[in-house]
Every structure is written in structure tokens, then in C-alpha cells.
Length: 189
Image (tube, helix red, strand yellow):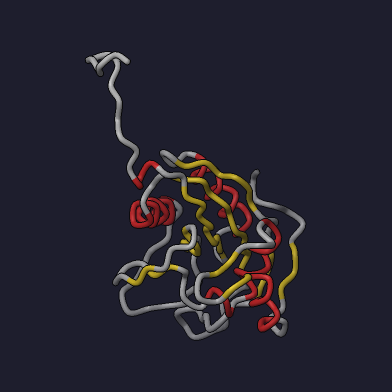
């Protein structure tokens, strides 16, 4: 075996080199929501060290605890889930998702939550990781209580497990009262 040279270097495998399976929730209820999701999927495809494996169909749901600034009910959301294979670390992926949101007009206003938005990208699952940091919690909190996450997730990953909860498809049973319907258009594949 020859020793490493300037043209032939060996590099040890590090945990960051491992390919992780990540699931990202996509949602929009402003500025042509289906187009927003399609544009977001195109931008996900452009992320470094990341491949979009598959994307769920689009689903329409009523807003959950979401109101416009004037207090009126928010418009319905269009939601989907994308499966990614990535070597990015969870926080790096979350930062990339925030950049996509900003490029598509998402403005975060401190102290406000659940407002209508052009785009919401949530890092739902990152392999079987459990993580609790000020800016990132894995699995995503309350994902197991939201049909707008579980239905699209189950459509592409019926055996997906939510760490600490179990199968996503089983968690779906608790959300049966939340109306959700498939739209006629899917995000760009």
C-alpha cells in the first residue's frame, strides 16, 4: 500500500460524512401556496450535500391556531413533506431551510407565532435523533399531533418512526378529527 501523497490523500470517515435521512415539512397559505411549495422543492434540490429523495403530494388543511394580524381566520394551508438524504448537520440544514424561507418572502416577527406565511419549512425528523436546543428540537415538537404533518409523511414513509412516539402512521389515529384533503397539484418532483 502506498502512503498518501499530495495527489492521493486518505481522509478518515467522520460522523458528518454519514448520510442522514431527514424529513422536512413544507407549508404555505399566502402568495400562491402551491407555487411556493414547488419553488421550495426546487431550492431544496439545490442544497449542498443534500439530495431530495421524494416529495409527498400536496394536502390542504385548515389553519391550526392561526390568525391574520387583524384577528381574522387565516386562509387554508397547503402542506407537503420532503424526504432528504444529507450529510449536513441538523443545525446546518435548519439554517439552509431558514435561508430558503427568507428568499421566498418569509418574515419572522419576534413575539408572533402561527401567522399566515408565504413559506414554512420545518425540520421534522433527522434520522432517529433526539435533540433539544434553543433553536432546534428533534423530533419537531407536536408533529405527532398534526394531521398536516402525519398524512404527507405517511404517504412517502409509511414506516417512519417518531423518536419517543413510535410509528407516524399510528400517531395519525389521534388526528383523525383534523380535516385534510389532497390537492390536484403536487410539488415539483
